[in-house]
Length: 173
Image 1 (cartoon, one colour):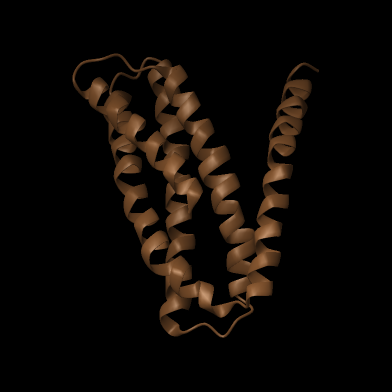
Image 2 (image 1 turned 45 degrees about the vertical axis):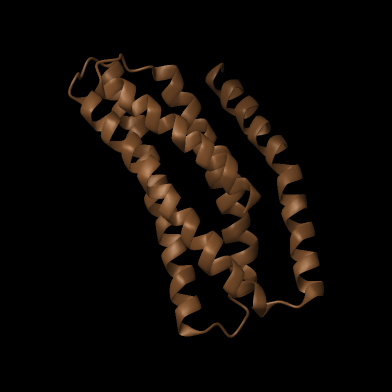
């Protein structure tokens, strides 16, 4: 849940940027690239990755109540929706850079959607799903899972930049 606090701060900045553009400010493609990188790397791959690849996998081995099984399915679907919106933001930015001025409205709408979506998603996890589902695990299982989260985090930075170097290497051939 600690990661949620940083995500919330970035979403506040995204909301401010959308408001600035809505007020007549110019679209800043560099800001969009940075916001997309933050969401894809930190919010999605790092944070959601731990949820989906570790927590949800482990919960899938438990006899979940119908409410908890449904809640987990909803969270995974919300992660998918956020990924789709981020892809749409990248697409809208590219169309804007290609001269499509109408893409500005789409950029604003997507940024506002992201800023509005994540707080509810985070509340659902923080105040409902996580505290409730923690009870499915023993203290030892929680300790092992926390260590798995740490291992996951340690690998992320290396994965990100290995992929960056591979992409740039391939582009230069």
